[in-house]
Amino acid sequence: MVAWRHVLLVGLAALIAAPAAAQDRIKAVASFSILGDLVRNVGGDRLEVAALVGPNSDAHAFSPTPADARTLGTARLIVVNGLGLEGWMTRLVKASGSKAPVVVASRGIATRTLEGAIDPHAWQSVANVKIYVANIRDGLIKADPPGRSAYEATVADYLGKLDALERDVRAAIGQIPAERRKIITTHDAFGYFGAAYGLALIAPEGVSTDTEPSARDVARIITQIKAQKIPALFMENVVNPRLMQQIARETGAKVGGTLYSDALSEPGGAAPTYIDMMRHNIRELSKALAP
Ligand code: ZN
Image (cartoon, rainbow, N blue to C red; front, side):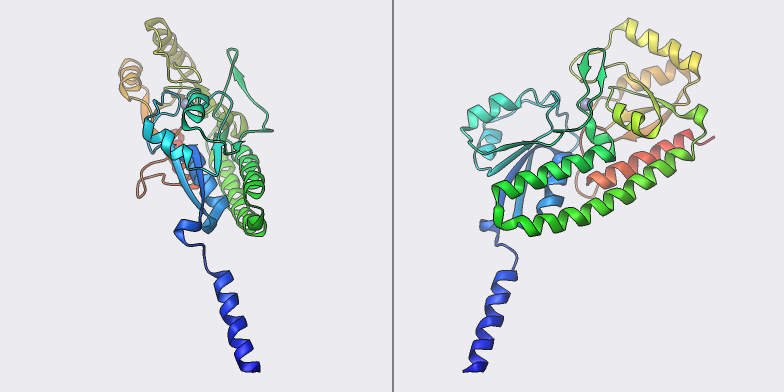
């Protein structure tokens, strides 16, 4: 009798501890790949996460399809960046008929503005991403209260990894001589990074990718590169490299490789997760800016 009860209890415990079967997982939809990775890290096994704007794709200029509306329609939780990044999202949520709660991951961060526009690229500061992760955790706990302790545990673990990442970013930038800490990128995606870690940035395209710079903008940048002796310019994974290649030719500035700005790489690529992305970017910056 006692033995049977023991077997039953052990069996029950195993049942409770088993990871959720695929069909029981909570469906969360993130607007773009970087956010998708953060949601995955908070949600662990309890979640099935989809990202609408995929690897190496531009979240500013995204054109949703009916399939995206269907994906959104299945979500129990929707996670967006906010700060004007996903101008296409409101209409898409409406088209999907979704009533799922929407978590704005950037809520509570200190925003940066550039020429009157709010800069949406807050994820380029690790300190901001810690706030993102806390907002995502709180949203998940609200949507799935039985998961509270699981979410709190995965977040505590992930925050530890972000602390280590932040230390490494500071150390890497600290190794670059102060007078060489300036770069050019195509669009202004690294303002939060620059403000947090001490790097000056110039970008011909401003905080979005939806306007092509004029010939005058490009001429102004070329003058600036020469006058300020900017050591390197960088391509981005989400924008056409043509403009940077032209500027490099006309200034003789070094092309420092590709930075991941607004999207991750494909799995197996150089930056399949947020942490990989930040580590890749500091490696590229260190290589190009070392004296
Ligand atoms: Zn951007």
